[in-house]
Length: 98
Image 1 (cartoon, rainbow, N blue to C red):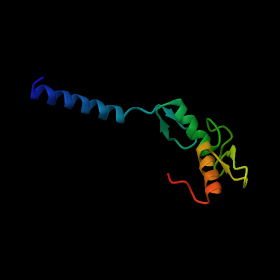
Image 2 (cartoon, one colour; image 1 turned 60 degrees about the horizontal axis):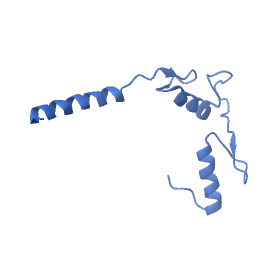
Image 3 (cartoon, rainbow, N blue to C red; image 1 turned 30 degrees about the horizontal axis):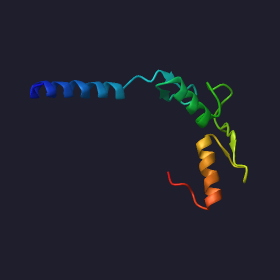
């Protein structure tokens, strides 16, 4: 491949990366109007940010659902990873570095 051919290939690949990064996010949250590229990302957002799905029964000031509880102190978390990191902090006496 010539130098010109390599340059053209780089330009095309760069253009594709820009297009992909600006990809449509068709899955819109019914509560806060944030958008997500996949239904799974939307569901994760709905549960962690609003405590449920689809905005049903969720109004301003509604409490976020925290299904993951610390068995040592009872504190609740919307995400399992957050609950695990909290438990590690209890057991080690220091917060987990993220």
